[in-house]
Length: 272
Image (cartoon, rainbow, N blue to C red; front, side):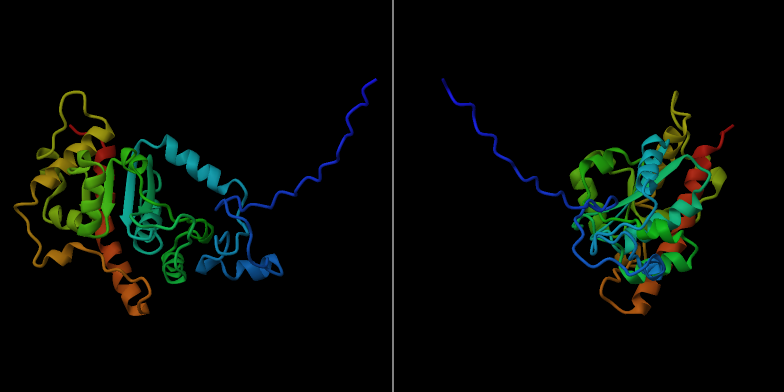
């Protein structure tokens, strides 16, 4: 008679706790208290991928992702590491476009997935009225074709970023501008001129169609309105530089954002 197989006990390995926002395993010590951790919020510590601890509301990232998926218009800001310029533009645009059916996100051409904003950028964003928990929840992401497919407007921080975007998806050539370039091209154009010069075609009177027509009009002005210097279309990179450079970069971004706000407002209006 055959003997029954001997059951061997298998010790199950305990799964490590994973940070919900960043998807990383905790590697650093937890803060001693919620109060202590909260003191780091303006500098982007909460939910930091460096520590792996997430002290943000557990469903904050899920709510944000759901809003992005359901939005009518998509705006993408792009820089190199997605820790300085593009996330600041994203944060400021989210506040400027509150009330519009628009999703704003950002990515980097050489980003390290999961990295937080630099403390300097996070501090600037909070000082300009951005929600601290939203600032702290930012995670850098590498630019992919999926990001570009969802974008009605791609805002590059420099001409090099614009080139890389168009190389990745050539169909975006008339929807991709550096942030400062777009502001320059439409700086002397009134709302009426913009409407008259960018009438959408038949069946394109939707916000997407109107925004696309206005961006095509802006692109047509590239050979008409030229910058004094080519680098005038770039936002300076402040990474690992002085506080003065961070302030200069933030100022260049802030000065150009009203043009984006204006385009979204006009795209959302009913044209006669």
